[in-house]
Image (cartoon, rainbow, N blue to C red; front, side):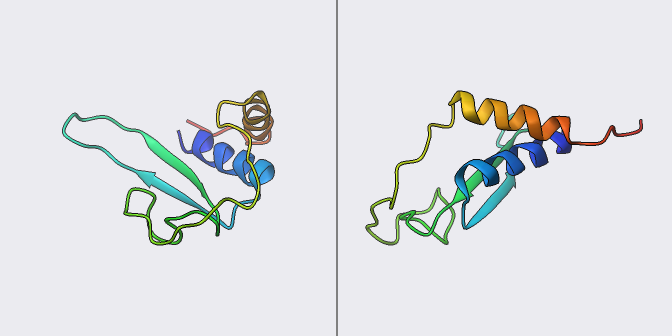
Length: 89
């Protein structure tokens, strides 16, 4: 699981060149595991606070960014996963 999280982080860094990336493992009432891998930018209205907080400033993104579902992101994650060494059981 962590190999996928780190590969996703690597792909996001390559594609978007964020100021930083937030990694968060959150769960609510139903036992489950999921990760948030969130690229953060200085022009983000919530930066540096969490994205689920209220917006601190009125900021307009400096440049348009590709959609998260873009084929480029899928390809970048696949390439990053190929670079991850096998994890021994």
